[in-house]
Image 1: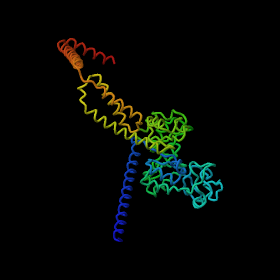
Image 2: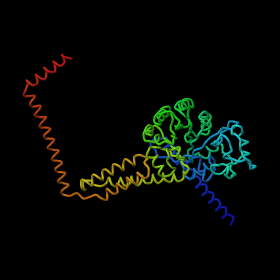
Image 3: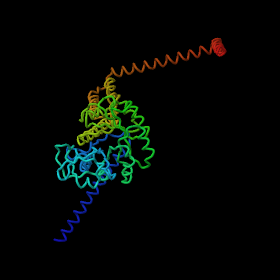
Image 4: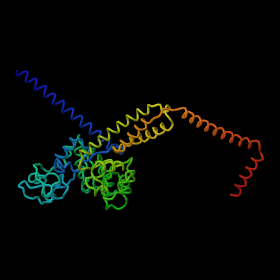
Length: 427
C-alpha cells in the first residue's frame, strides 16, 4: 500500500512538473512572438491595459499586472514615482492620498519623495480600483518597479510612464534586470529628449515613446517625424481634437515605428469612446497600440480580428483556384474587384474587424453571383480581340508607311537636316 502511494505521488509530481514546464515554454513563446511583432512597425495591433485592469485590482498594482498577463494582454501600462531613497514605485500621483490608506486606517497625505521605500511598504496599503475618498482599502502593498518587471517577464510587455529626466536611471534598472526587450519608456516631450537618450543610454536600451499632446507646438505629423528621426520607437498621441488621429500622422511611422493611442478618456483620443467602434476607428487610422480601461474585451476583439483575417485568407485561396474564364465578363470582373479588395485588407495587419467582415461578405457575394459564360460573352470577347488586332495593324501600317515615305524622299530628309542645322546655328 505504501509503495503504491509513493508511486502515485511520484507520478503526480512528474505530471505537475511537465504541465508547469509546458506552460512556461508556451508563455515564453508568446512573449517572443509579442516582442517580434512589436519590433515590426507593420505588425499586428497590440492591446494595452491602462494601469492594469482597475475593475479587478487596484491600478498600478503587482496583482493587476499579473492578472492582465494571465488574460493574454500584450502590454500593461504603469506609472513610476521616485521615493526619498531613490527607489521607484508604481504610482500615478506624486502623493499617496488617492490610492492608499495608512495601515491604522488614517489618511495618507504624504508626498512620495518624502518617504523611503521601506516606510511605504510597512505603513501603507492600496485602495481598490482607481482609489479616491470612498474607495475601500485592500491588503495589497505598493509594488516596486523591479517587482513589476519580474512579473512581466515572459508574460507581457510594460509601457512605463516616467518623468523623462529619470530615463537613464530607469533604463539602468531595466538593463540590470535583462528586460530592455519588453519594457518601453514613455515621457519624452520632444525630439531633443529622445535624441539625448538614444545617443547616451548605451546598449542595450529600452525602446522609447515620445508624447504629443494638445499643447505641443506644431502638428502631430511633424512631431512624429522628428521623434522617429531622433530614434523613438513609438509616438503616443493625446488630444481631444480629431485632427491628430488621421492617417497622415501614422503614415509617417508606417515603416519606422508604432503609433499609440490612449482610449481611457474621450479627452485623450479625439472624443471617441473606449469601445469596439472607437478601437476600429483608431485601427483604420493606423494606430498599432491601443490603451484601454477594458483590456480583456479589447484583447478578445483583436483575437476575433486575427481569426477573421485567417478565414478571409482561406476564402481568398479558394477563390483564386476558380477558373475565371468560365464565367461571364461582368460577374468575373466583380469577382476580381472583390478579390483585390480582400487581398488589400488582409495585407494590412491593422485592418479592423468590421472592414475584414465587409471584404469577406463582398467576396462571398461575388462568388455567389458568378454567372456561367454564354455565347454572347464569347462574341463580346471575340469582338474585343478583333478590335485590338485592327488597331495594332493600323498602327503598324501607319508607322511603316511613314518610314517608307521618308526613305523614298531624300529631299524631305535633306530639308529636315537643314532645318536642324539652322536651329543649332540660331542657338
